[in-house]
Image (cartoon, rainbow over all chains, first blue to last red; front, side, top):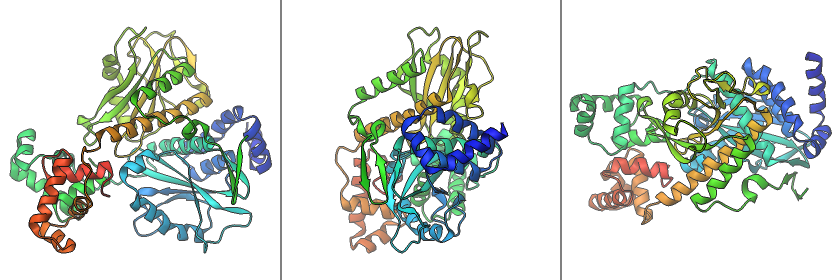
Length: 249
Length: 249
């Protein structure tokens, strides 16, 4: 079994071979792919998973990013990558911009749809790599991610395969997330606080929520004050906007 | 194979996703689901949306499209009763397809070459087996496409992957139709959107007025008219809706 995997691996790494395969065989290669992906996915080795997926789709480099963390300081948004470091740094601001400029609805409607873009002119790409890169967004639970792929020049991209790769990356992450490798941002809000936020977003007043939940309106107001403190927001409106933006309600 | 030469790479024609006739009404969705049902050799289908997104005990699965009754002895309610909670919990952390097997030992559903990427529900609660594909788009549009099956079946991994990818497409289509239908009868004006955006960013009316060079009363009037157009009872609900509909970020 190991030997078999190794030969397949070498074969897969040959770009020409995998291109021919994508155009002629197509189907049976998927079973091979799923088998190759299973082991690293079970052990939570996302780097290896992504290398397998890159081979399948013909990509030369991968960058899997926590799209929802990209606006924060630092490189925490990178889940796994074999992009040149300078390129990751250069693209960080582009990612943050595209994240903040698209609406939540646009984000929802573009899941698993490959998008193509050109790297900035001043970015340095590895020799033989196309300046065009591809982005596929995916969700695992409440976590939104983007898979960015670089391709060799003159490579033929298959949108169908790119979608499958996005889906398989989500599968692999689901497996490793279930093993507790990743923690989600819960903002440390309690169930009661979330419940209050939910009803406020539905347009209910403190008095109405007090009736619905059967607790006093002062308690409700305390919950909301506590939410505003935890989320560093100044008004009720901002707290709700924050909760909606972060998929909390 | 149609290949168009572009700088740096070629992109195959995207036949399955954008190449087809665009979906303009809900009646375009049904045939797509029927064709997925056929490809799985299933006995029906149902597309569910997750409603009441925020709180665990408020979440439920609402049917959007279904073709469930024919040949199935228990209704869709029985399915929700049996597996609804398990599916709702699953989609919060995972994108993996979910399988269940019927009470009768001769009827089962398996995906032996897709292990470990399919989750098998242990309890046998229904007279039929089936598969449920989770679709996680973000703040809105999440749900499942479910296919009940009869008899013993071992689904090929390749097929599961292809159908799951198309389920994403179907749920995305349903969401885009929904949002078009739910769009406010009068669209929001630029001023209304600007006021909502600033209110969502935590500004109080006085600050918005100063920022936009308006009087406080005008700002409140804009927020009031926006609230009516968004069919909301107060400005907080209007802000939540405006974010979900993509008017503000």
